[in-house]
Image (cartoon, rainbow, N blue to C red; front, side, top):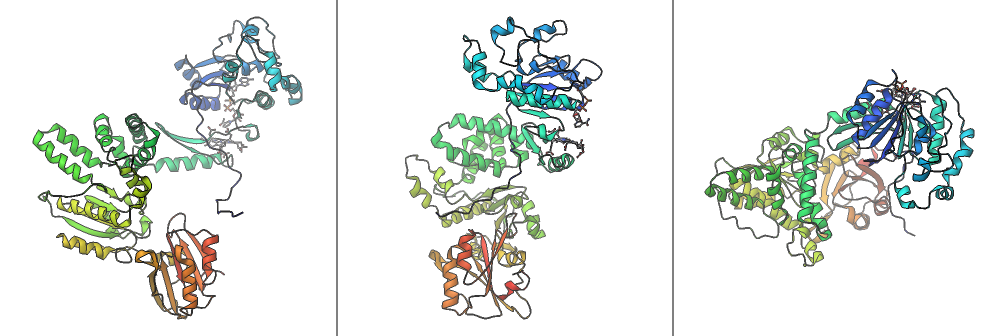
Length: 617
Ligand SMILES: C[C@@]1(CC(=O)O)C2=NC(=C\c3[nH]c(c(CCC(=O)O)c3CC(=O)O)Cc3[nH]c(c(CC(=O)O)c3CCC(=O)O)/C=C3\N/C(=C\2)[C@@H](CCC(=O)O)[C@]3(C)CC(=O)O)/[C@H]1CCC(=O)O
Ligand SMILES: NC(=O)c1ccc[n+]([C@@H]2O[C@H](COP(=O)([O-])OP(=O)(O)OC[C@H]3O[C@@H](n4cnc5c(N)ncnc54)[C@H](O)[C@@H]3O)[C@@H](O)[C@H]2O)c1
């Protein structure tokens, strides 16, 4: 059997979930400092809460106030904990100081029933804070309740089983008391009753731990160290909170509303991919602060782009709103601006309107480097900030795109976007998606730039790496010249230079390498490039786009060009990104390593003896 490369399992984690406890019944035992924190946590998650704690000076003022503020969803049982507390549903108001007998609706041998609650009261042993009820003592009585058979037999026959099963008396227990034996007893009781339980600060007696959390409306960030370092969890949580984008909570609220509207507008599962693709682009292309400002009117305008799979920018939406508020003539002008801006790949573009430029148009081809924003030139960073319009490919990471202050347009992905942009749902999706080539994406990018220039904008065409090293930069400049615009170019760090460096391969090194050849593995039509250099021990060959051609490269270099089989090859995948990987091979093992290690594009091959200077064998 062929085993594919999958991520290895790293055991020892906690399962982090977003537990829905709305209207569920949570029992908190204790009323001190820790209980107060737990109460806030579960009330914010809309639970119904029973707090069990003697009503004395140990009941914290915070707990008291929250109870007073939420009479419908909380109640206090003003005494010490009793076992029956874990089997009494929230709705039963039988806990009063005056009638403690009413508590006894439950024997440890069965669940309470409507009839037994009213009639057969059996008072269970009350456990005081200094009693030491051991597990052994509690177990025999409790064990009867833990099997389904005895549970069913304890139910009254006229009570439908489903109701009982779907409405357990208690859904969660949080114990925050300063009594260790009782804590252990509560834990054991919960185990018998299958109730998830957390005994504060006793990790072995917790089905779940609490996380250090940050909340901003619907955004919740939870940090867990799986009990290893609660204080560190606290510090990491603060660090994350300090670095979140402005107004992220509000942005999430508004996106929630927008998604609901979109689902209503286009509900069917068949439009699912289009819906999700479009929503993702809105989230990627709008800044958080701008998403936060969405309201009824602007949402309607944004949604109007969905039909043609267009994502209007914030500026376009603002322009449209302003237009609707101005005269009809003005509205028409803005309409035409928005339509042009909403250009898509399937439409035929005839931008007839040469809008008279108020400002001088400026076009700059900017190298974005290998992907790390810190490796941008200062000039590139400044231009990104200053540009009215930034036109970028999909491959450029959002951390770099985020530096742009003006409008951003990002090329669609090769497959999905065109597929969903297709207006006729009956069309053959496969034919359509294969019709998208990098050439028509390039046309789209060029078109966007031209349009911005005709509006007098400063347009930054952001390109991966360096615009002139396999970046088609010069082709673009020739294209824009034909349309009457000249371009400036800002260099970027090409991965041809940075990937070897990141993997600790000096492209030149006295005695090992005094020449560098940078080549692509593929030429037009996807064929293998035929101008790799003949063997020279002092030459380093950097191969771009080689992953799919590893076998052919290895064979050609050894057989036709005289390279020895043992020349080192370093495969650098995702250079300068968080998931960077460097793999060692030789010319003879190159194809094997690529296959076994599942190397993927973008990867750079560095071939030559320079590979053995700094890297350990
Ligand atoms: C996140 C947070 C949520 C909350 O409880 O609300 C939480 N502890 C917080 C703070 C905190 N707790 C402690 C200190 C003192 C400094 C220190 O000891 O490091 C500080 C720091 C402070 O107060 O700032 C003492 C402590 N905690 C535990 C033990 C027992 C042990 O480790 O054996 C001891 C005594 C150790 C001893 O005696 O030496 C155990 C647990 N504490 C957990 C959660 C669970 C694991 C979470 C995780 O690590 O992922 C777990 C397993 C059980 C549980 O779920 O209750 C909250 C952050 C609040 C915030 O973010 O503001
Ligand atoms: N204080 C802290 O900073 C801190 C932090 C994390 C964990 N803890 C742990 O959490 C637990 C609770 O801490 P706390 O600071 O809230 O304690 P606390 O002493 O302030 O409060 C304990 C509460 O439990 C109640 N209680 C005692 N016996 C009870 C019983 N039989 N039935 C019902 N209620 C009963 C008391 O009346 C009191 O309200 C302790 O085990 C402590 O070690 C404390």
